Image (cartoon, rainbow, N blue to C red; front, side, top):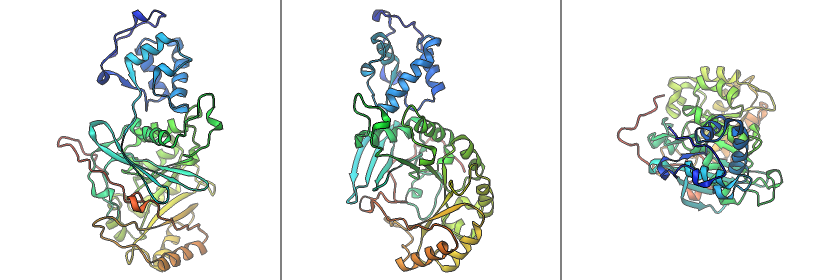
Length: 388
C-alpha cells in the first residue's frame, strides 16, 4: 500500500522518496490504473483525470522519462511523482542492423530475462515486430523461438516498452514544440509476431495495444496493428471485441496430420475448429481480412494439391495468404521450398481470387527474419508454466 500525502505547494511536506525498488512503474498502466495510482499517492480525486491526461501525453506522445521535464506540472507535484513512481522501459542489451536496414534489439526485462524486437523499414511503412512472452509455450517445429521453453509472460509495460525503446532508437518522438500529428511515422505498423503466443498473454497484450492505439499517445490505428496467433480458439472472438486489431493466423498446413506436426496446438483445436472461429471474427470484411501465414517447407506443405486444398478450406473467409519462404536457423529440420515451387503455389491461390504475396525475407543476416527469434533466457526453476 502506498502511503498517501496531500499535494501542497510546500516541497518540505512531500513524502520521503521511496527506494527505486519500491517505486511503481507508470508505463503500461491503463488510464484507470494510472488515475488510481495517482490518487493513492496523494493526488486529489478531482484532479486525477486531468493529471492522468497530462502524464499520458508526456509518456506516450512526447516520450519524456524525467518527471522534472514535465513543465505543465507544478514543481512540488513533479517532486511527488519522482518520490513515488518510475518510468521504466526494457534495457537495450544489443542492437544489430541488417544490410537491408532491419534492426534487431535484444532487450532485458525484469529478472534479467531477454526478448527480441525487430524493426523492418519499407518505402511505405515501418513495421515493429513485438514479442509477448520470454520464450514460447508452443513448440512449432519450424520456429526457432519454439525451441526455447516459456520463461514467463511479458507485462503490459514490457510490451508497450518495446515500442517506446524502438522510437527512442529511431528518434521518432516529436521535438520540443511539435505535436505528434506533425511527426514522420517511422513506426507506422505493429505486428505481434515476435517471441511468444500473444493469446496466452491476452490481458497484458490487450492493455499494451490499447495504449498504442490511444489517440492522445502513440496513436496508431487499430488497423495498423496485427496480432498473430497459432490458433488459440477461445480467445479469437475476444481479440476482435476487446482489442479490435487485424488478425493473422499461423496456419502452415492444409491437413490436420501435417499441422499437428508443424503447429502442435492443432491437436487441441484442429483446422475445422480454428476456421469456425475465424468465420465469426468481429468486423471481418473485405476491407478487414484475416491474414493466413503459410511458411513454405520443401516437400512438406508446398504441393499444388496443398494450394488447392488451402483455397477450399478458407472459402467464404475474406482473407489474404502470406507465403513465407522458410528462414533457416541452426539445427532446423526443414528446408526452404524452391522459388519455382513457391511461385506455383502462389499462382494457384491467386487465380482462386486471394492475394498471395510472397514475403521477402528481411534481416536474415542478423537472425531477425520470421521464425528466427530466440534469446538465451532460461526458465527459473520455480517458474509457473502456462499450460495450453
